[in-house]
Image 1 (cartoon, rainbow, N blue to C red):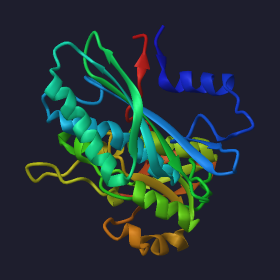
Image 2: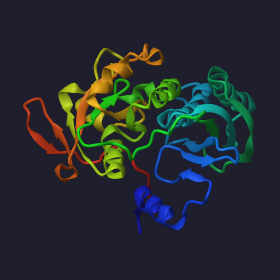
Image 3: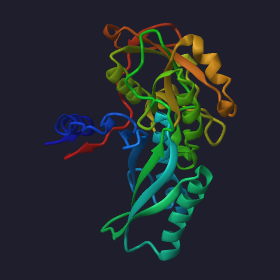
Image 4: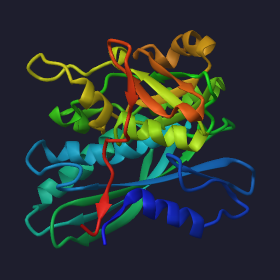
Length: 307
């Protein structure tokens, strides 16, 4: 019988209660455990799988390796952690030659050097079909409180850190993970909730609303839509549902938006207000250019199993 990523995650969360060292467990962008000295250690893993997250031949292997680490860095940014070290387990098929395998790791290592994280181990195995890279990272909170999906308050402004939609036109392999911005945002103490936009704005917004116990209104005319190769722009539907944008969605007090935008670490990006949180009974809705409201379904991307 088919089942969804959400249903399995809900089951796992009920079956895997947190221990005395667990500060943040299943259900957020990354987990937080407390070391004996009291420091917050952030743990996150992500898989990058051929024919799911990329197609062989659409880009050089180095960009695939880069994406495998960048996906994890995006999650660390959403919680406010500084990257420290990571493991990479690679399953490689018979039709991949060694220069291409090395190129995968070259792309990953080049991004690691930029963020100061070290590859410290992992595993190599043969894959019966396709490339699969699993990156597991360790980050440090350095005294900052983690940004979570569960802190949004009714009346918060909903803000994104960059344009959305059309990611499969090349952005999904070349995006800049917002880990630096995430550190600054967490250090400010002004962010009530955050999530990285990997599964589509609509789906990830539902995750924040669900975790925080609020509703949400999105103004479609305010959505920053990505410029695409050839001069076009992503559609509203793409901005809401495409996924793999890897920007951050933030819930903040409206009076704090300008202060966040003025942070030096955010100088290279533009914070864009796209809506607000509302009472939970109002649900998650979109407001079109004419001011008409309609329900906004999760849409976006979700892994389905057993089909």
